[in-house]
Amino acid sequence: MTVTTPPTTTTTSIRHRVGIEAPREEVHRALVTRDGVASWWTRDTSGDAAAGGTLDLLFGGPDMRIVLAVDEVTPERVGWRGLPGGPEEWIDTTMTFDLEEQDGETVIMFTHDGWREPVPFQAHCSAKWAVYLMSLKSLVEGRPASAFPNDVKVSRFD
Image: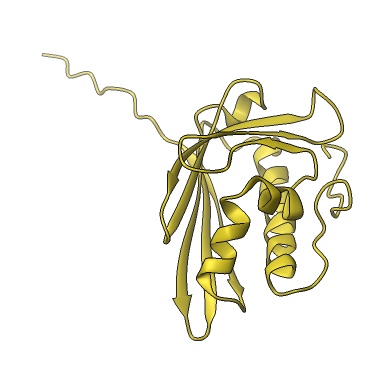
């Protein structure tokens, strides 16, 4: 008798941990309002950042677009899911921002999960997520944020 092992499905993730010296409610507000997201990620943001909404983000043109479903909004977590219309690699991936107050700061445990394979674009996105999370940190801590187009350029993928 031959036993066939079913193929395993593995995915890869991006993870970042950032501490922000501000109450969780302020960090949360920057994640769950369109104006908040536009302040730290890309100025060209439209849609609805509330639970059940859809965000449409442009990065300099229609071919540089991200479309996200807002799947979860609680005081402790914000969850997004990549939709068609954005990068192929992002479709059905999930982005979660877990928020916890620790030692006088709000800690974000950010995960961008569900990448089908660890391609160079994923590595680029990991670096860009770090850039944008630091922009979020600056915004909420009262310093100038660096939303697109004023963000740090990482490579020609930008």
